[in-house]
Length: 72
Image (cartoon, rainbow, N blue to C red; front, top):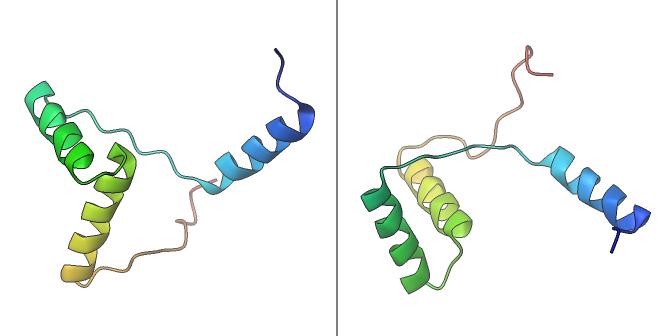
């Protein structure tokens, strides 16, 4: 079943606002992250983003930045 045009436009608009960061942990670490996320009742993405946010806050790092000038 094809995706409706309006759904595709909405998906494209949402994806344009998102960054893409790929992580490739060793399998044992990946299993541990998956298990911890499940135990916390979170998706892997939510778990990792929360961990990053907490560490950045603890270290006094800004939680948002403007994109670099050379990023198009």
